Length: 97
Image 1: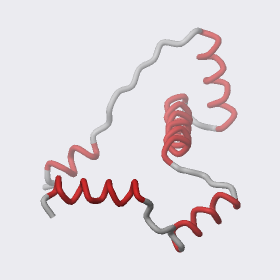
Image 2: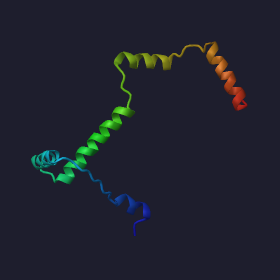
Image 3: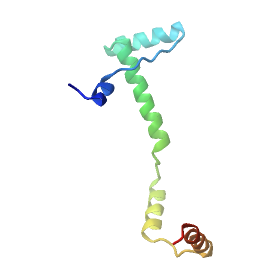
Image 4: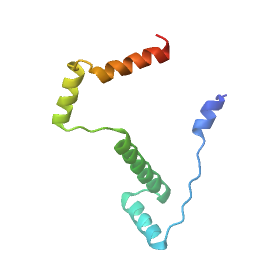
């Protein structure tokens, strides 16, 4: 018998939306053109849009120049200045180290 976690992951959730008739017709037509059911089309489209939105907000994209600057800063960090040294001293006092 599957454990509770396996049963929970297999469960599906309901998602409902009210849309204008023209939008519903457009979705239905697109689903027909791709050979999918309306449900499959909506799920796949919503999931693709969700993944793209998450990627856009969570992934940092750098230009070639920015990538080089970041790599140089990580590989050859500058010496700490007075402000950084003072902040580190404050941290050591706060953390008791």
